[in-house]
Image (cartoon, rainbow, N blue to C red):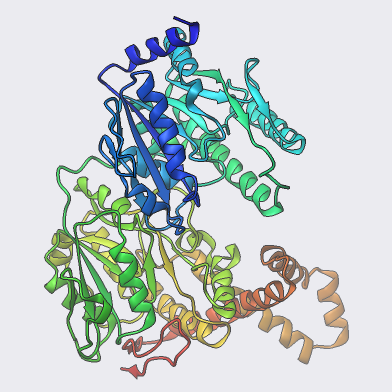
Length: 620
């Protein structure tokens, strides 16, 4: 028996009946997925290692899912119908692309082995090195073994420019994170199951710094790391690194450092208690009628990884089910009433323990229900929300409206509502475009108040918190929310928000009286002062104001807007710049109107949707 055979025998003995799960994320690999899976299966079968292969199609859309459908259990249903005695297949299909982090998490949930290997599906790193990983784990009593391109026994064909970037990143990671490994990014890693599960429960990064965050969380808990050699042949498939890729990886890395070293987030973050069953979720959609956006929303709901759901669509008038002819989708006409009244109808119709509210001009990520439902094992949690990000396919002016909302100078402390990212946390106010609430809580507080729109969701959240329930934000509970086009529809919507927030500041201060809401109005007052000085005052006074720095805040503001709206596309930069300024001015005007108003008007939803049609008709 050769030395490598001895190492394979040791691997098979270590794995024993506990099993090894090999999670392989696949993206746009339809042409080679079958061959790669069979290569891996043959390897472990030949050496008698009890292995569960968990290939995960990360929403490729190129037929990779059809390839995986031919794999099941211990039998490959292909032309040769071969069978395996030591290897089983457990394919997972994510209907939407969610990034490497989401794919690996989905694979881990489906896996069963005591040992878990993460292996890139393109097989640039072949798993024939597996015995060396198990040798390191056993000899060094390690919890994690990382494949390293810098291991002295590694064989690597690697482009020179990639070596430079990798060396710089390694130096940065060693200095600021203290990880005692020479490589964090190589796509082959071996974990003990409990260590990987602990880290994945706390993960926030889905893409570029995923590996770094995963290892940082595990090491902070006390996991022991070791390294093993790898054989890598990249060939010519890697070109120059794109600027936006480098930028995104840098931002993700800095975010991990901030959470790890400054916030100590991973040690303290909320990890939901496990559910003892899969509760039925009633998804409530208030809408004026049928539209392409509603069809898009329903199509995304059908692709959810969590399958115990029903949908209640609430149009003004009866509409035909059409392509939505699914037994779990019901249409209940309500007449022309406000969204709060529609949602209350939905609550009464709901059969689920949890009611999920989403707008018809939004559609959910494929893991939307899965990531939200897990929190409801904790009875202290009454509601869960997540970000509503601008869809990648929005038309130009709607996309730029999304850039305005996404701007820190516009969304401020509430930036997390418009961009996937940030940390899990308790919040006190959250919009109904992406909100899950316990049905018993809704029944206790009487559902939505119907005397306000917009703002009814602010009052709902106030009532939830007043009843001693928490509202949790999770950045992975994502919906894609179509935006209003700049400038008219965007400013009309923003103006309504500003007016009601101003009114709520004096009427319902517990979750509305916040300094950040007053800032645009203070800015408007400052601009009005400068305008009056410019029109009415004498030249000497204007010069004195200039010497005292009276115009300095304006210049600082304009520079800040220019920096935060920067884009390599000049027309995007210019339009977003003026969009941010117009948003501040108009919101500030409407806020002061609401603050001074004796009564806030209420409106029904009408046809004010992201497709750019007209506003709803005002009703007092």
